[in-house]
Image (cartoon, rainbow, N blue to C red; front, side):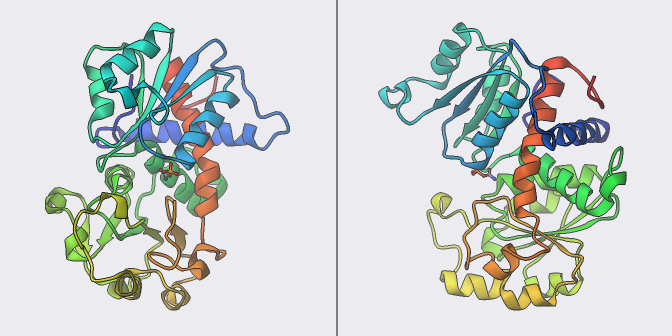
Length: 317
Ligand code: CP
């Protein structure tokens, strides 16, 4: 595996190998000294053309914990504002001597272009491209589910038989796409819940079932309820009448949260629109693993970087 661009073609054994290495990374994460020398001498560029809090900081923390040298590039304040292209920006950074690129871009496919255009010849990691994919988010979500469900016996396991309900703005969600492919590979069953206007036309080809009723989906008591952010910044049209109606029909309100089994895991990739897709009662509840997702993101990204830059598979050497 040279790049991580998508979860669509990620083999089950490769996904589980990454999750297992992330288990090792988590062990180091709980020590006083969290740093490992694994990527000493390597230089990694974080190329962010779109805003981010969790992913950008988490990749930077992961790189530093592996002792890599880190270059942070943000399109804002760079020569992108003078019209510099992705190709010229990437080649400029490459000329400074880099070993990997982590890229977030508003255009779906930008990481593919970087990986396959021949402009640069280093591993490319997709940190979220447009409405297409966000593979490290899906891996950290799978890691978080596996840890909560299988606990200490997580290593080597997938998510066979786990029932996951993904709720909300599927149309614009790269998190949903990457999760759907990875969850299917790991053996989970996925139900998608959304207003008809926020379901992509291609959904019939995806390994999911679809319902438009959140109450019906929650009555089935899924193991995991993953709420998605309403991505207003990507909406040019009105997809639902108003936020109050969205919340009352498709939101994880306090009342719906109270109806869930106590074992149901509540997830959200962040950033949250509290009071819209998720209530504070649900987000801050003991069943919420939203902050675990953030913590685990560092371990999973360490595992991805370690795998791509050292060629290791399955265990920390
Ligand atoms: N989940 C996620 O990608 O969050 P950020 O946009 O803050 O990175």
